[in-house]
Amino acid sequence: MNLVEKINKLKKEKNAIILAHFYQTADIQDMADFVGDSLALANKAKESDAEIIVFAGVHFMAETAKALNPNSMVLLPDLEAGCSLAESAPADKFIKFKAKYPDHKVVSYINCTAELKTMTDVVCTSSNALQIVESFDKDEKIIFAPDKNLGGYINKISGRDMVLWDGTCEVHDILEAERIVQMKIENPDALLVAHPECAAPVLELADYIGSTSGILNYTLTTDNKKFIVATESGILHKMKNDSPEKEFLIVPSDETCSCNDCPYMKLITMQKIYDCLLNETNQIELSDEVMKKSLVPIERMMEISKKQNII
Ligand code: 13P
Ligand code: SF4
Image (cartoon, rainbow, N blue to C red; front, side):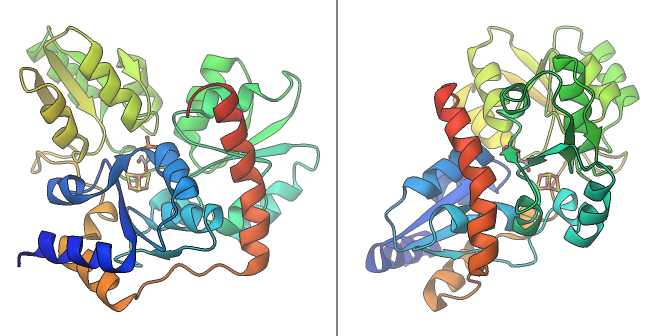
């Protein structure tokens, strides 16, 4: 049996499912039961009746799945699969920051630890951040953490003035506007799509800004034949499958590398998925208190997203 067959056999025996993010490698996306953006994956985890959820993604996603589905065993194939945004906002530092703004509500991007979510009023993802922020009264004072690029972009399009935590995604923040301008000059027929974790000068150039699923939907439904893509390279797999006749140019992160990989997402491999499912290792554990408290702002996000037909 090859690895895919072995994983499928184990899945049946153990009543397990595999959830994967769009930044996973093509083999993992092809084998997963569901591939999605952060919000869709959280929703899938919540609705799942599987006994085991193997999360092919990063730590904060697996923690969110555990909080939403505490009775399932949630396995992360490599526990080192973190996220620079989550790491930028340790709970002890955030408590001190928050204390400076006692009259502010907290909106946290889902890319943060469960502990940070316990200090949050409503969680958001890149596909619902605007609607979540706009669910607060216009004069409500808000701290947005931990992504200053997403927070700055939401400030701009909503006209708010949220206080921003100084965190960035190490993959998106280094994409350079100058390089994109050059790509646009060389490809005047291409549209630029960008994830809102990119820095403001990149977002200013974009024809479309959205979550991974938003970007995929845009490239699929827009007639244009060529796109410059400012996000992680894993997204190209579905993009090319959905629109084989279109051309996609990924924005390279530096001179030597034409790829643009998240080092945390790419820690997950087929072998690690098999191993953790076989041995039931790498379980996500949250204390009862963190689980209970972090679930409140996550559930608020789910409610608002349902009302607004985002999920
Ligand atoms: P999405 O919610 O758009 O899938 O983004 C997740 C992420 O980590 C982007 O870097
Ligand atoms: Fe975190 Fe950036 Fe990787 Fe997404 S791409 S998981 S935000 S480090």
